[in-house]
Image 1 (cartoon, helix red, strand yellow):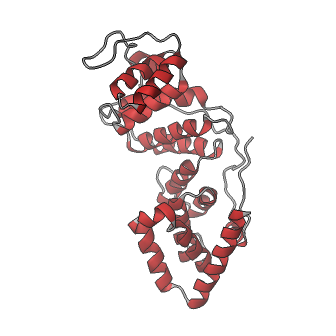
Image 2 (cartoon, helix red, strand yellow):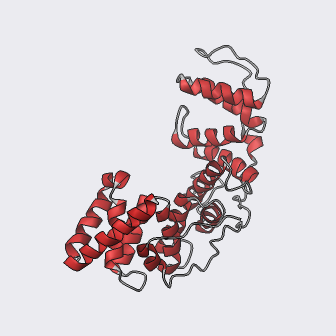
Image 3 (cartoon, one colour):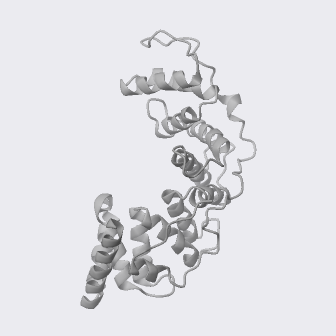
Length: 295
């Protein structure tokens, strides 16, 4: 059972003090994922394996195993032959290769080498997530399984037009919750916190959101860092902690967060509102945080 790392610096201890999650953070498996009623099983909607070759593609070679098909797809992707890759991935997926399911889900979700098709992406992610929901959280495959759950969560939030996948914040919460608690995925933790902050499908509860944000922050999720910083700076959870909030906003604005205008603006506005003493304390907390991360 996975145990999440806790904050080691004085700043983080201060942040979490008195804020207890009402849902277990010890990694206990959440309920099995629920799939929207009426969604057909993936196997019934997948195209058959590569029986013919489209113009411009290499001659069809029937793979001897799903693994060989997946390796063939990987080589085709390296050389930019995405149509060929999709054919090999479909063969591998039909014959039980999990990574092929995930990769096809990503390609259809992003329109990468294929026409974007959200229902196809949903079905691939669904099959992959269902098959590996209880994988060891420490396994190399775990982050891909978590990514599939997060993708399903987003589909349930918005729904997919002209399909059986209707908007369901409750199902979205369950998808994010499994990836957040069992797999410890920082994006899922951020998304779960966002549901509580927005009151989307759940009662709005900032105090329930904060522990999930703290977990994501410790894993370098810069959006979670910025949002937690704002909450602490403004006292949205009940107690204003301006120095700690400013510290998190500063951490968030370093690296990829520096390219996010809303994060940059949030930090600049907060600095302008902070006193000299609060800015000095934020610097001390930041230094302790950075020192703790190097240890």
